[in-house]
Amino acid sequence: MLEEPLEPTRDLRDYLDVLRRRRRPMLIVVVLLFAAAALAAVLWPPTYQSTGTILIQEQEVPPNLVQSTVTSYAMQRVQVITQRVMTRANLVRLIDKYHLYADRRDTDTTEQLVDRMRKDIGVQPISADVIDPRTGQPTKATIAFTLSFEGSSPGKVQRVANELTSLYLAENIKTRTEKATDAYSFLRGEAKRLKAHLNKLDQKIATLEQHNLNRLPQVQDVNLQLVARADRDLTDSETQIRAFEGQRVYLMGQLAGMNPYTPLAGANGRPALEPVEQLRLLRSQYVNASAEYGARYPDVVRLRRQIKALEKKTGLPPDVDEQKAELRRARLELTRDQAKYSDRYPDVVRLKKKVTALEAAIAKAGKSGKGAGAASANASAGASAKPTNPAYITLKAQLDRVDSQVKAYRLQAVRLKAKITRIDKRLMETPEVARRYEALRLDRNATAKQYQLLLAKQTDAAIAQQLEQDQKGERFVLIDPPQLPERPIEPNRLAILLLGFVLSLGGGVGTAATLESMDRSVRGVKGVVAILEAPPLAAIPYMENEADQARRRHRRRMTWIAWIAVIVAALLLVQFFWIPLDVLWFRVLNKFNGTFG
Image (cartoon, rainbow, N blue to C red):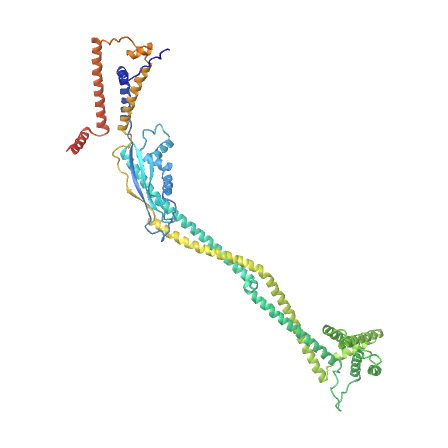
C-alpha cells in the first residue's frame, strides 16, 4: 500500500520568515500608501458649517378665541418656505453677493453652482413627543428646525447662514400675512357676490308678489272665501231674479186687462170701461177660459159671442201683438211650472191649453191679414196719449220698478259670474305661483344663511389677518443665530490618517503575500518535503559571511530610520491637525495625576 505524501504545515515562524524576506517591498508599499493618506488628509480642503436654530412658537392668543387662517403643519410650511427661499434668483444673488465658489465659476455653469449651493444648505427638523389636543394621543410634533450652510470660508459661511435665516424669518411672515390677506379677500369677494345674489332674489320675490298679489299662497284662503261669498251672492241674485220675474208676469197680466185711459170707477161705483177696453178684457178672459174649459163650455161660448159683438161694434180686428205678448207670458209661466211640477199638474195642463189657444188665435189672425194695421194704429195712438187710469199708472210704475230690479240683479249676476271666473282662474294659477314663490323663498333663505355664515367667517378672517400683521400668531423665532465656525466639519483628518495607516498595513501584507505566492523557490526542510514528498536525512544551516552581516546591519539601520520617520510624521500630524503636543502632554499628565494621585 502506497503512503500518502506529506503535506507541509506552516506555523507562526514561517509567516514571520515571509514577512522578514518581503519586508522591503512591504515597507515600500506601507510608506507609499500612508504617504498618500497623509497627503489626502493635509491637502483635502476644510469645510466649515454655520448653523442657526429657529423655534416654531405657537400663537400668543389662544386658538379657541382667534382661529388662524394658516392651518398647515409646521414642517409643511417650512418645506414651502424652503422652496420659495431656494429659488434660482435668490441663490444667484447670494452667490454674487458673497463671491461663493470662486474657484468653480470658470468651469461650472450657473445652474451647477445653484445646485451646489442647494446641496450646501441643510434644513433639519427638531421633533418632540407631545400630546395632540384634538385626540389626546401622544404624537411627534416639529417644534423647531436647524438651518445650516457649508463652505470653505468660516466668515462667508456665517454671513450666508445669517442671511438665509433672515430670509426664512421674513418669508414666514410674508407667507402667513399673504395667506391671511388672501383668505380675507376671498371671503369678502364671496360675501359681495352672495349679497348681490340676495338682492337679486329679493327683487325677484318683490316682482313676483307685485304681479301676482292675488295669486300668492298667502291669499288662497281669502280667494276661497271670496268665491264662496260670490256663489252665495249669485244664488241670492238668481233667486231675486226669479221672484221679480214672477211678479213681473203678474203685473203684466194685470196691466193687460186694464184700460190706461179709463178711470178706475164710474159715478155709480162700478167700472166704466170703453168698448175697446172691454174687448181687450173679454179677449183675455176668453183665453183663460179656453185654457180651463172646452170650446162648448157655456162661459167660453158666451165670451166668444160678446167678443164678436164688440168687434162688429168697434170694427177692430183681433190684436195680434197683444196675443203674441200674452203667448210669451203663457209660455214663460208654463216653463217655470214645468220646472216645478209634472205634466199632469192642473196649472201645467191649463197653461198648455192656453198656449195652444193663443197659437190658434194668432194663426187665425195671421190668415185674415187685417189685424196688423189696426194694431199698429192702436199702438201709435196709445203711445202718443198719456195713461189716465190711476190703477194702471200704479201697476205700470210697479212693473217698471220690477223691470229695473230684474235688470240690476241680472247685471249683478253677470258681474258675480265674472268675479267667480276671475277668482277661479287665480286659484288655478296659485299652485304654479306658489311653486315659483317657494323656490325663490327657499333659495333666498339658503343664500341668507350662507351670507350670514360668510360674514361671520369674514370677521374671523379679518381678526386673523390683524393677528398675523401684529405677529401674534404662530411665528419663527431665532433662538440660536449662526456662529462663526471654529473647526471644520470635514475632513476628519485623524480618521483619514488612521484609515490610511490601516490600509497601508493591509496593502503591505497583501503585497508580501502576493510576492510569496508567486515565488517558486525551495526554502528549508518543508520546501524539500513538499517537493520530494520525503523528509531529508539531514539539514545544513545557512552560514553567513561578512557581506551578509553587513547587509543585515544596514537593513536594521534603515528600518529604525523608517520607524523614526513614521513616528515623527505622526507627531507632526497630531501637532498640526488634531491637538498641540504640549496640550496633549499636559492632558496626559493630568490624567495620570488624577489616576495615581
